[in-house]
Amino acid sequence: MAPASKPRIVQIGPLSGSPVAQPLIDAHFEPFRLWEEADPVTALQEKAGDITAIVTTANHGCTRQIMEAMPALKAICSWGVGYDSIDIAAARERGVLVSNTPDVLTDCVADTAWGLMIAASRRIAQGDRFVREGHWGQVHGSFPLGNRVSGKKLGILGLGRIGEAIARRGQGFDMDIRYHNRHARNDVPWTYADSLVSLAAWADFLVIATVGGAGTQHLVNAPVLEALGPDGILVNISRGSVVDEAALIQALQQGKLRSAGLDVFEHEPQVPAALRALDNVVLLPHIASATHETRAAMAELVLHNLQAFFETGKVLTPV
Image (cartoon, helix red, strand yellow):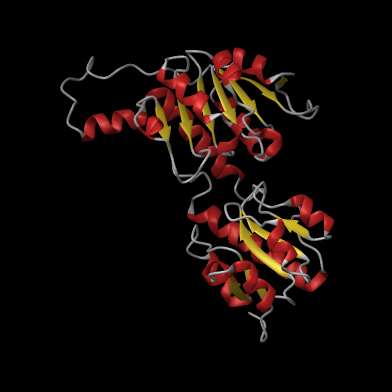
């Protein structure tokens, strides 16, 4: 049951990605809805000086300016696994705890990566449009051939929780699997590639599952795409900032890359018209974790992180 006197928290943006998240937060806390304020920083200074916790999302993040406006702040609990939109350096300077929602979304994000791999390789989205638009005139020959997925070479950039789940699924497709990380892992059976370019040159599929942020900005650039080559397929379920989007568009337009499956983009929710015009790319609106089960589990974990902070001064899943 909710406590009789609910703790006040600052909520930076709406939790619109789940039908259960906002009611859950409202039942246990009194959120100060920052996105409804015309001047958020001034509102924080005037109305939230004693509030110690923030709830946010991977999209809304939390800036240094917001932290500076909240002198009593001690915890930032984020709904989502990515935290590149949170100024981690500013939080650490102030001793502010930051939590995210790992693990609970791993399987659904890995499933989406596989959906994009198959869709991009077998032209599934293009085929759907082809049928809907009434172009199917014969059983064979009127629609271009796709490419096989099983038995191919799968390269993974970022072998964390999600990358590992993608790799395990690849074993079921009889794929040869390699990965590139900052460091090799000695607890997995897959081959380590010491450079991203060499991984791309080897792979049939390159799946991006690394973190976002300044350290991975445009890590997948023109040389990487050139190495992946005209028979290669790129899939991104991490952050749009990891890919040089202009270089990707050029590679797809010029046939230097076979196809791509993208759940994330460099300037979301804006997607370049050039990408939207291409038949050899599958586009999703950042929905890798968007299932009823996963979004509910994420909301529960945010709630539990907030409750743990107010009860013990600690969070359950610190960044």
